[in-house]
Length: 469
Image 1 (cartoon, rainbow, N blue to C red):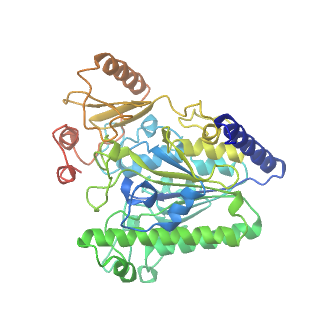
Image 2: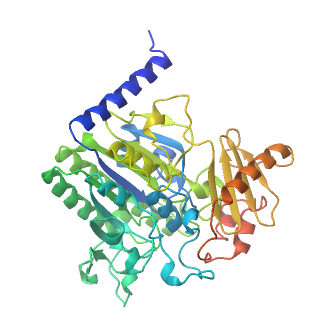
Image 3: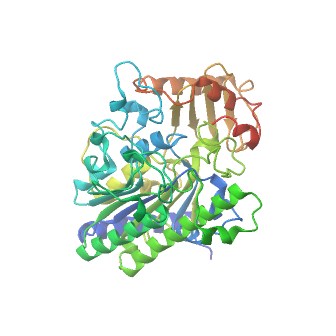
């Protein structure tokens, strides 16, 4: 006889409880790896519908773990999204609303453009309970020395400070913000081969070292793939010679290379015998960019917008024996949850500033509980709130936009006129949240004009969306 839904839930809950209890009793804290891709489209990963680029290793994470269909980040652009992820708090709470490229507002200077020093990162918090910590790849959370990863809780750093850099070595002069760092040391450009490979090489060396020392670790593996500039190795380009668009061919090659490198990380965990005791979270930092040939599939909008295509991302969690394998989870989760989940499994219950995320493992085996009653977004002229299936987008001079994502995932039909009470309710929720926030500490690189235009119902189709970054 088929097992009842309740029995399945009970068994799953008991497995989670006993696995985590055993880890606590044996003092085997799980290793935690966050793998972050950059500017990938929602539909560019095989588990989310892509059939152009094979991604077998990202597929394996989904088959061996839980795939979130409504995985969200806290911002639709790179730096604020990363600030939210690494602190577990809405980044607007400390003024990090925009990419650190615009002008600072009164009372702040360019030297203040980074994650507030009063905020603790996930690395800070995990070090408190014995974790060794490493950040690899793109940082983008402040170029000043005081914001350097080694001063923000990370024991090691192997990456670059800015929001982008060439994947190959620079042939011309470049500043230190675009340099590749190995801790405090700058790696000479003539030693740089291809960044995605180099980042993975560092990850593998680190995993081997930690496995030998039997020491729990947190690794933040923030690939800059598939952010511009679009640059790929010839051997990867050859795999996609049938793709007509040169830009898309390069994009596909970069994505395929990243997947292969993720496979190398997974293989190392197995070879070192620590795969079963490692929680892996894979996600993208925001929706597909307007400049890199990414594909958001049926989702409207792209990077920089409040549409689903700006804030909904591929998001997978895997931990053998704890996180259910092959599960598809359809309730809304957030990148803000990574901090709370990591602290819970690591056993750090110390309270600092309140977190905006939740421990997702508590929710995955419970069909009743919902991780978030509301999720919020705000950047410049645009703000949004999601409450279960309902989503409201508010943009300065535009009329309000209201959608029911349960029946209109592509946000094609604005229901605002037909549901004035729902608009009023969600406007109040958004306003109440905004009252908790200080002003942004610096402006965005683009003014409100782009934001207003990209959120008009008449701005339809990828060609138009790409006109307004």
